[in-house]
Image (cartoon, rainbow, N blue to C red):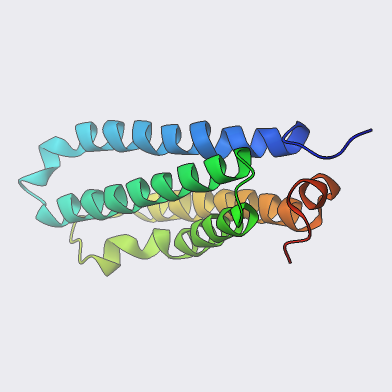
Length: 149
């Protein structure tokens, strides 16, 4: 069985990085911004929160596209770019539940909302860690891109 090439799990990672992750961020951004509009006037801190999350989300989407296209096109440094994206997602997921406080939002964030944000962060951290481990240990990745450790 030929391991070299963008197939199998590596293809799934490329599709995830170039299509699924950016689409999820943009869809979430549009729905959240639309649903939150009525609160922006009464709670300017809430607007800052949505704005910061939106800017970070768009930045992560661009990074995701770059990493995914680099992997798909077998560009030099592609594995490093993908790992960098996954490390960034990991780090952002750690601070994401605390962003309302960091941006000075006075909008009431309930304990339930904080717990859901933490749960979302845990799932995102697990997602990033699994793909990072895949990039680090996959025989297909090594055969396709060389040993990039």
